[in-house]
Length: 115
Length: 117
Image (tube, chains in turn cyan, blue):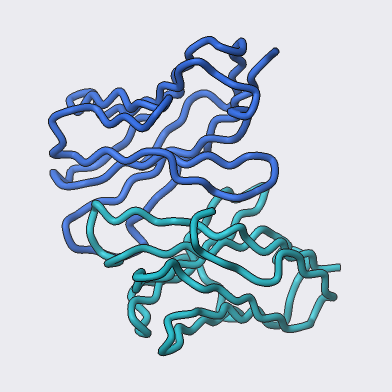
């Protein structure tokens, strides 16, 4: 158990819908990352927050947004869902968020299926 | 150019044998960290081992060790005494720089390891 929690574990929804994925980082970690893992694209970095502020953006679509709250939990919002958004979404957390020594610990993931 | 290369899409190993999973990386930054993660069929990503670019010794964590050859830019994972539970996908990852953010944490394509009884 990494100490990172994600809910829900599974999510099945229809095209055009909107969903929210939730993540709680490990105790003491200030940085949260979101990743998308699909079969054809591998593990893709989406976005990073550090202590409530956005710090880095990767291949995140405009239909997707995220935030980190004062209690450090984070939410990833996916809207106008398409079939291609079906994937495993991971949240990870780390202490500082910016050092090369900073290890990311991953949550169990949320498997999103868009029908 | 690919930052992380894992040339073995799939590997087989006999139970109780040792196995080496290859990883080469590309960076011009003198400061970087190398990480290995395991992803079993259940889907979670499990952190295994870390090696810093300035570390003088190869990292070890239980049955996992990292064969770090800086000049060759390789960071191979060695699993000793393989167990059936080691069957999983293994990802090599790198984070560059002393002071940067998440977009610089890159993963390789992974190697699928199957341990045979």
